[in-house]
Amino acid sequence: MDKRTTAIVVTVIGLLLCGCPGGFSLFAGALFALISFIPGAEIDIFGSSNPQAALTFGIGAMGAGLVMVLVAAVAIFLVWRRRKA
Picture 1 (cartoon, rainbow, N blue to C red):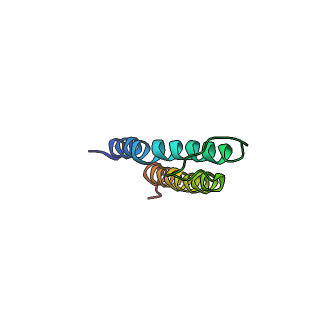
Picture 2: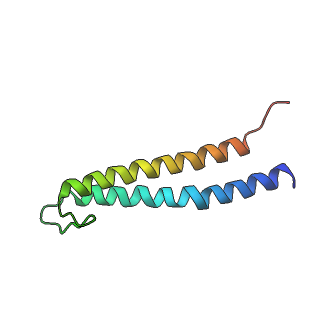
């Protein structure tokens, strides 16, 4: 297998295993954080109806999603960069 094929395989696997779940986690975290500020919203975060729990969960999910997206981006960058001879 040549370098280009390996780079394509690593890119696809990285996007499927880290990029897509990371993007979903970023979106869901932002949604939970936004919902925590809506007055009268019915919030149920693991049995808690406290808006602070929704905000904390949202910020945590956004942080985890950001880490996952960064891992995928770094892996793709390291595979596709051109090394000097």
